Length: 141
Image 1 (cartoon, helix red, strand yellow):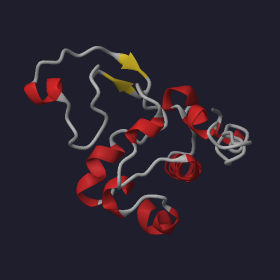
Image 2 (image 1 turned 180 degrees about the horizontal axis):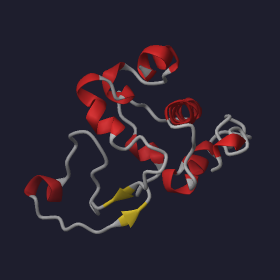
Image 3 (image 1 turned 30 degrees about the vertical axis):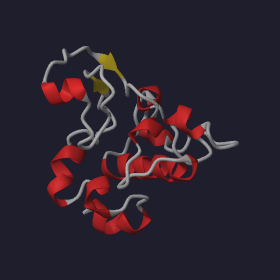
């Protein structure tokens, strides 16, 4: 079990941020590095239960957006606080997850917006946090 083996290094508190228990299906369905993140909601809602008016009323219309719609900072919540310090840990955690479970990394990191988020820290990049194709050259991504 990935979480049992690596959970002590996770930057997240509790089961929700780590995709464990009741939260496993919500996390693991999108955990593969070949997943193409996308968004269909055009309102201000980002995550959890902080619904905006169109989401509450059910009056919104889907519109496909490839990649993560907002900067990663906008998805910050108590369970998964995203700030310059935790962003490095988050990128490392996701790359550990991908490399351990799937033996590969995403072919297109730009859809995940990691580089943009890491730029908030001086001298940070995917290479600097150990999360790049250079780090895992045998995986062929």
